Length: 283
Image 1 (cartoon, rainbow, N blue to C red):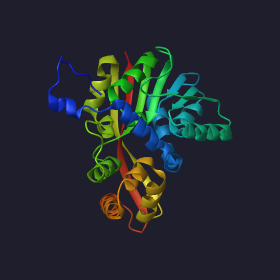
Image 2: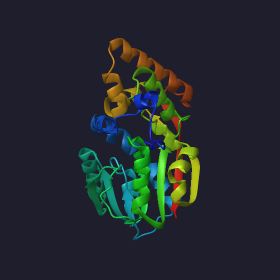
Image 3: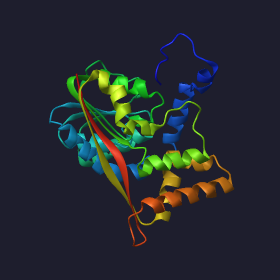
């Protein structure tokens, strides 16, 4: 999290300071639960769009940070880039490896913590993350690591859910039922231009940030909730932390949120969710 500029902290600030190690361990357990790939594979178009926004060129060295099951990884590899795909959940890396093998794509997969990347300064022409690095415990450290391993003149690309969009609002809804750890910063801050400027502005030659939409398409609102409840780690863990009455209340609130965003009138689910597509050109 952001460093404290003064020598002392008042008791209230100390009480709010999160235990980052504990938070990271909890997050790793969350993303190791369920089966993120069931949801993740539906987001493939976002990785493709990000690669185009970054104007990736064949032969460039590309690092995918918190890659999950490899959406952006595969998109970059399809453009003949030399891709290294990283995550701290080995099961997700294995799923990405299987996808790359199935398509005959050459990708290097490596277990790595986004807050402590095991690569030299300036090792990559491009560094990217789709809905991944935004879920780190220490935002500032993760951003600094992305900057560090990107060469001067290289690009850092991200797709991050915006607070006012559907997924941002779903996390807000979950937070009303299962309180986040004290002092933890919302992942949705990564989907705001002021926070991106704060984390990357000092190392940037230029920053482009454009609101985009990913459209969730499911058989029905009930189908969406079932998939997210069983396979999407944060939702699975939230329901698991509640008793039966609490689970019903959370399900009802998510259903109400879906009803507010759903554009479909035929019983299916068509829900646009805002995200921020960011391209930072490294100074």
